[in-house]
Length: 333
Length: 265
Ligand SMILES: Cc1cc2nc3c(=O)[nH]c(=O)nc-3n(C[C@H](O)[C@H](O)[C@H](O)COP(=O)(O)OP(=O)(O)OC[C@H]3O[C@@H](n4cnc5c(N)ncnc54)[C@H](O)[C@@H]3O)c2cc1C
Ligand SMILES: Cc1cc2nc3c(=O)[nH]c(=O)nc-3n(C[C@H](O)[C@H](O)[C@H](O)COP(=O)(O)OP(=O)(O)OC[C@H]3O[C@@H](n4cnc5c(N)ncnc54)[C@H](O)[C@@H]3O)c2cc1C
Image (tube, rainbow over all chains, first blue to last red; front, side, top):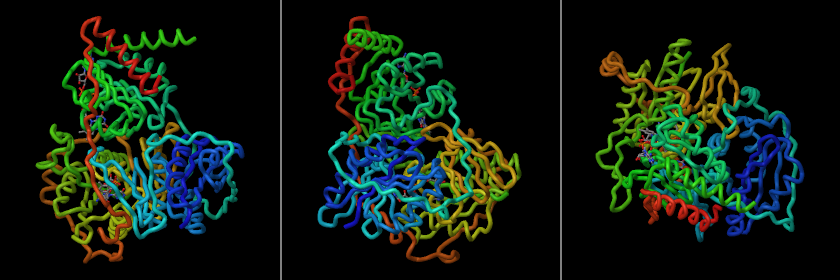
């Protein structure tokens, strides 16, 4: 049986946390299949000690193709580099994160490799007997879970929802090999030119990678009231989310929107404040580990989905919670 | 400029009700509509037509009823529609769907730009757009939130990604998938509705397309759905009241304890 691969992601020479989450998924599969686990990195500027961390967090091998010309994600070039590696090594399984680049690179690569691809998985397992990968994913707004396999094509490809698994602890005693593969410049696709990045706001957040998300809805009544949501998020070390109602009213930017026409998140903790829990919003939060609802309406749909619900006025409840958290912080110091 | 807009017919979701007994979605009696996220693609195309001049063709693969979503696209402002429909296409995964769509696109001849939705609200994979680009070997930009400029056969774009907005440009022909932020979709006009009613929409089938029979439908799909479960949606959660001062304080205390117990604090 051939190797299990996970794709590492980098930005500005830093490895993204999803790279380690994928390794904990890959480790479980590779152990069941008794094959090596490989972390594949395409990018630039990730130094030796950071590459070592991939081994310390589960990989047996690292294949790193690094070059300044690969510093930005360009689908066509990355797909050619990855395709070449697949042709050479013929992995049995290839996992990537369901991020903006993973969700672009993987379908592009799957077509070229004539491989099946399952989207946005939250569970992965190996089928007894056949050794096939069982890929389970939410669909239809999280209302069903579909289990999918790819019996006749290799590699078996899947994207995995960020935050749906925890990285393994760093183990400095782990050993493995790091193979640096030079970029073959004939693989560069010159058509797409990346010119840079722009951030609108100081608090531009990557909601999908946040452990804690505090979200506000129309119940907050106006933009300024998102101030208390921000403060609570800051205190808990979380990010701010919003419903479509709040975004369409201009209270928060679109990058904060959670739901069917926004982002899908799987944080450890989601707190919805002044949010009714419409089916299109729930589609984005169903795989959260813990759901908390703060809403004055006892019949709000979000209360029904919540692990913990507070029926009350957000303008009283949130400050009361904030006061306790601030107090707790002071006592700790 | 020639623009193609692949659109999918999906079950209407805004009136979806949950069955309180089983916690599942009640799907019977649901109407089919244009995938809501494809409306942003259609709007983007119509705006490009207004600003630069373009000929717009909406294409949809699906059962004969998908004719309805093509008529809606024409009523919004598309010039043509093409239905791709055949029993042999049924049960296709994203690999086979994107193959069939890309062969239909080849049959239509040269194009400059394909604008797809970010994802469909039912299958929800977001894979078909980039996969079509791979079949046609054209560059792709996903999660496009803004078209800044179209100049000298290149399109200048912004993509919404984890690090902010990535700015890039690429030459025609190419494919983009768009997010909600790009534009507010317009409603169909009366004039458009009248035009679409009388319009002949051609149907592409396995008979009149150049297709590899091994790449079609369920049989040609590398992925196989082995089972479908309905997850439990209600979590037997704890609900506390925060009405007067006393219960408010108690609720806030309990919330903090909850966070401590769950290891958040
Ligand atoms: C195709 C389509 C796509 C969509 N995509 C999305 C999406 O991506 N994301 C999304 O969120 N929605 C989406 N929607 C919209 C969705 O249907 C709902 O309209 C929206 O989620 C409601 O937002 P809300 O909960 O903020 O507002 P409301 O439904 O108006 O709820 C406000 C809540 O605040 C509570 N409230 C009021 N005052 C207070 C107070 N003082 N204290 C505490 N609680 C209070 C009320 O009891 C109420 O429950 C979509 C809809 C469609 C049709
Ligand atoms: C529960 C379930 C889970 C599934 N999981 C997977 C999976 O993991 N992997 C897989 O390969 N297949 C999967 N499928 C099959 C997949 O849903 C179908 O192939 C579907 O036809 C296209 O995928 P989508 O709905 O995900 O579209 P998306 O890829 O999300 O759609 C993106 C865009 O592509 C265009 N588009 C998509 N379909 C069409 C069409 N028929 N006609 C015109 N334009 C279109 C639209 O512009 C749309 O906005 C699954 C199906 C079900 C029912």
